[in-house]
Length: 61
Image (cartoon, rainbow, N blue to C red; front, side):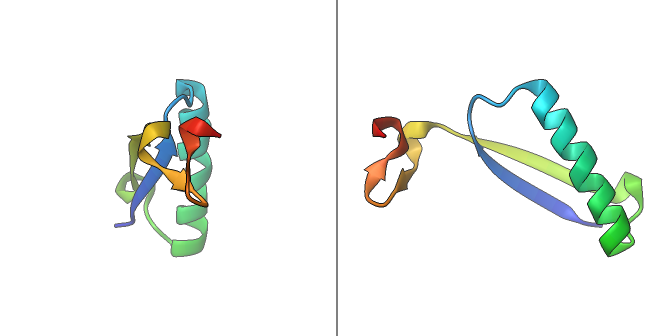
């Protein structure tokens, strides 16, 4: 059973998430020989104030 955790900056739409899970699920089925019903994807939203790149908060860039 593939358990896939995805961290995203907040702001993605529901349609974007639907498209993403469809594509990732198809890849897991194809590459990992997983059963569709066993592919689990969990999103964790991260605020721009909670992450930094190169020493600068994303919210400040």
